[in-house]
Each structure stands twice: as C-alpha cells, then as structure tokens.
Amino acid sequence: MIKKKIFCLWAAALILSGCAGVFQGKEKETEPDFVLTYAENQAEDYPTTQGADKFAELVKEKTEGKVEILVNAGGSLGDEKSVIEQLQFGGIDFARVSISTVAEYIPKLNVLQMPYLYTGREHMWKVLEGPIGTDFMNSFGGSSLVPLSWYDAGARNFYSTAGPIESLDDMKGLKIRVQESELMMDTIQALGATPVPMAFGDVYSGLQTGEIDGAENNWPSYESTRHYEVAKYFTLDEHTRVPELQLAAQSTWDKLTEEYRNIIRDCAQKSALYERELWDEREKTSEDRVRRAGCVVTELDAGEKERFQEAAAPMYEKYCSEYVDIIDDIMDAGRQ
Image (cartoon, rainbow, N blue to C red; front, side):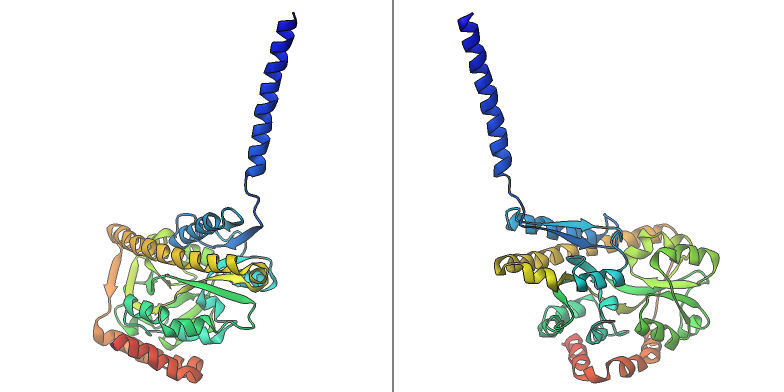
C-alpha cells in the first residue's frame, strides 16, 4: 500500500513537472511588442497581397516575433481613399495603395502617373529606383504618411464592349469607367471619351448593363475580375504605368524604435522585389488566359499611339507645370 502511494506521488510529480514545462514553454513564447494592421484591397492570391504577406512574414522573422503585422485583404478595411484617411489619423498602421489615390493628398505624385510618360517597364523602374524615385519618397513631409517601397501594378490599357479600339477616333463617345481621379477623368475627356467614376466592384455589372462601354486597367485586374467576359476587346496602349506604394502611418512610425524602423524598411524593400517577380508571372498568366478565352487584343501602331500621346499632352501643362524639370529628367532617363 505504501509502495502504491509512493508510486502515485511520483507519477503526480512527473505530470506536474510536465505541465510546468508546458507552462514554462508558453512563457518562453515571444509576446509581440506591437500587433499592427495592414490594409490591402485585392484578393488573397493577387501579387500585391502576396507581397504584403511576405512583408509581414519577414518583419515577424527579423524582429523575432516582436512586431506582428496582420494583413487584411479584399478591401475589408475600406477603399483606398478611406484607408489613406485612416492611416493619417492612425486607425490603420500599414497599407498598399495606388499613387493615383495618394496624389490627391500629395499632388507632386501626379508626375508619375502622367499619360504616356514611360517608354516601358524598364524605364519606369530606372526612374523609381534612382535619384528621382528617392526625391518622391522624400516628398511626404506633413502628410502623416511614411512611404516604404514601390510596388508594381503594370501598365493600364483600355478595354471595351463596343468593339476594338484601333484608333483615337474609336474613343469618341465611349463611356469609360475611371478611378476617382481628376487627372484620369480629364485624360479620358482629352481622348474624346466620357469618363464615368465608378467603384471598382461595380464595373462588371456596369459593362454588362451598358452603363459603361469600357474601362481601363492592367492584365491581371482585367482577367481576375472576369471583365473579359463582358468586354472582350482589349487595346494595348499602355496609357499609364501607375506604381503603387507601401505606406506606414506616421503615428505608428513614431512609436517604433529605430531598430524596428530599419527592419521594416528593409523588409518592405525585399517584399517589393518579391511582388515584382510575382507581378511579372501573373501578368503573363493573365494575358494567356484572356487570349485563350477568345478576346480580341489590339496593339496600336506607332503613328496611332502618337495621336493618343498628342491628345493627352495638355494634361502635362494642367497638372504638372511646376514640375517640368522632373518630367524632362524622367523622359531623358528613357532615352539613355
């Protein structure tokens, strides 16, 4: 009987010892200093969302779990305009947004989305990764926003339900959905069409019902939203290459130590390179899917593209007259 009691006490001690080990193990788990939010309006499988996930993963790894970033995809934290406003008062900590939206708060960024500014993708990245891009990154003072890195969003092109857009004349009278951007609305008017500001989520039904005749976007968005089902005519004019930005709220940034800030900047840059690779892959996949679906893809010839460029030229004077030197530098970079 005594031996049995001793055995039971010994067994209980082992169990308690094991439990203590479990509790001690839990105590050893890193408790984050910060749990921060990240707003992303695209779906989980979209390159920018995957870039955001990589950013969060890298930050957690490099801070050894001390900084945790929770990515909220699919626009669950609001559209881009409301997200920027929430960043400004500290309701959201990080976000990925188009510079089209940010330019409403920092007009200088309009330079980077001027129509027909770049000769191609390489030209744009040469600009953004050089002194010109650094100058833009240093232009956020007083905005309550901290820029971290550039993300790719490809080139925007027109697509239509009415038929192929093969010339500037084909734009006349078309109702084209645009982002809520004065520059884009004026550009569409300059090309002879009627701009229709519309929420991105309403574009499919708008094309389907005839509320709009067309829209403009990049290959992945055209494909992933299935807009090609109702607007099968796609014209490669590359009227804009609008990069996107990873941003931090200034109020959040001010709370972070210098060490954490450096880590976050480094991780943002690494995630941007990762996103760019994903974007390139996704662009090719999306184009292939759209072509196989039977869509009509038109590429403007050099002469016709020049007509589009000339029609849009007044936008430079209206929106960027005080940034002529920067525009000249950008165009010079494309000739080198």
